[in-house]
Length: 64
Image (tube, rainbow, N blue to C red):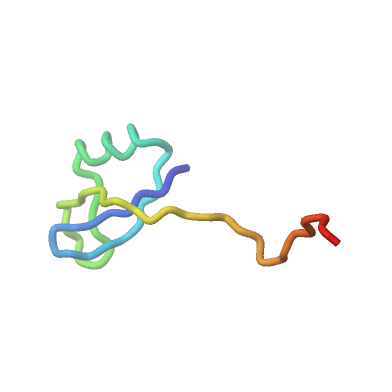
């Protein structure tokens, strides 16, 4: 799965989960996407912040 940040024509930002970028494009072409806040079908992908997966526990770097 891939998560895209989306923005509707009314300015609501939300996430959409898709199997691939092609799946997103196909759903958009078929007008199957809608904003969960207002129902607007005018939905675009917007740049998303990078995500870093970091453990909350510090690693032992081996230095003593």
